[in-house]
Length: 278
Image (cartoon, rainbow, N blue to C red; front, side, top):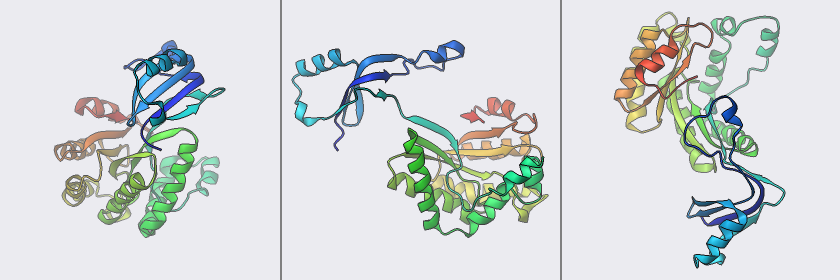
């Protein structure tokens, strides 16, 4: 299929009209056009409206209808693809057994402190072959696409060492090349403190800044840098140091902020102009 497409006669065409975030009741205003049509030329949307209006204008323009693939969307809804802006797409292993621990009342941080949670997945991802990570990632992207996701942000952070963090980001590049979905990579080497740096969080940040961030930035393996700003993980000061240094290298800032304890992550995000605080 070329980049020219006409979708017409959609029972409902959802435009999500507007260029700013909507709040409250405004979120229900989806900009729906009944019997709608979309014209896409060379991969770019050039016209949206009621089918009668769009097709009348198209035919009057003198363009060759045979140059376009057409889809009759009668009885269907047409809407923009979803953007999943926070995922940990590339990882090895599974943690299904931890559901039983949570059901018994163990907290997220309790599990992390005894080597489960993130650290369990770190061990599995470090030992995983790159091709295995690619294949599992493709399956996850297939599932996302089936639910209407067309763009996904993907974070590293299940390596916590140079080799595996780089491996995760390289896998994301492979996935972006191999799959129709757009994969936007985020470097999150500061997702947790690895066992070999336990109790030495500042030294771990030093290591990330000296040995990993420069390579990620110079090879353009990621667009963003994220950090888990949380009690018993990385402090506000440590998070600030990592993110400001990464920003100087060209990586835009994101934060995992105030998930468990109100530590000040949201305030830090505002202070440094982070793209997001999740």
